[in-house]
Image (cartoon, rainbow, N blue to C red):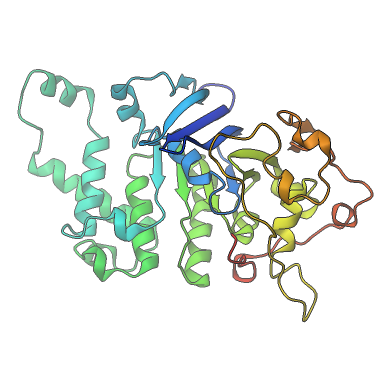
Length: 364
């Protein structure tokens, strides 16, 4: 096992080329994920969370990583060839996408799809040699029987009732929560070191949502894997993650331990997000909305991307890249004015919302 972070993203820039110009979807993001911890990516829709996650897996097409490095367990993914990436994706890094109805194949049973994932990622050196020599694929009956047995075990691990009989069911016969668990079973078939989950609790009821989040915590504790959890729901991040990275305009605004960032936020953007939570309003008070519009990603940002919506912005906020400042050993932020010691928002310690009480407004 290598020392250092399991995943290190440094100064990542991912762009999409359009007729209007280059869209800077990720514009210099940096963060790490350690083994045995859950790191949350938090921000509004369009802040660059999903593109960042896909860039880590090198699935950013039709976008392109134009600068920065992505290092996974000592390997540089930004310079790796496609053959190396195929070996890492699925085996060492797995991703759970947002919508299981678009990910699961409707014409195959859930058990078949999990078994296929098991077989693909259990290919050993002997089978690779047979493939190189042109020997037909190794599909012995016993091997597929073992894969189906493992598929049932994974369904049981995901707490799916009657896993043996449900393994023969098709995706449309599963509820939204069960489909999400089936996707998680496929992702875990190869026993990855890093799991990336992109909005895994979207459109789930609160009880099912809590079960899925509990499953992530159990995976962290039992299998010591690193998890990168993408969400716009502050409650999900507060309940599940060890550290949080707040993104805006493709840049990291604030990062640190969940308790520190969400109970005593220092960046104006983080404080604004928390102020828009249902939990952080007085009785009878309307839920705040984030005033203004997100920045135009065309051409990138020469200064703080939040400057036009920030009440504390000064001329310094418009002059070049804002460097990250270390508030302590773990808590960092990119703001020339923070911490705002005289701001009541900064001095007030907040209670992070729970998922069932922390739904965000329409700007999230």
